[in-house]
Length: 125
Image (cartoon, rainbow, N blue to C red; front, side, top):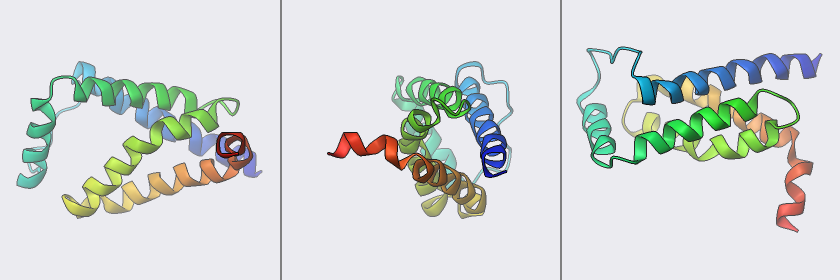
């Protein structure tokens, strides 16, 4: 039962990051009108560095694709972790209203990392 729950959660997590990454390339989701001023400034700063958003988008798509199948989930969790930390920190310091969702996503990532901890041991030995 735990494996089925983990698969469904991983599928949703992966699809969400694939969608977010593709949006960075194709801009198909509208930007909310009521974004906080600090977040607007942060996004403008990210856009100043022309290669940053495509890089984050590519990492989100690759990490999301790897996160879905159980065989590559451990790699996907590591690939997506830096982006997830950035999302969490942004929601802590800039947009606290999104913190519950960011924290839930971070905990899903940590759960997958914990479930696959034996796969990471050779890297630290």
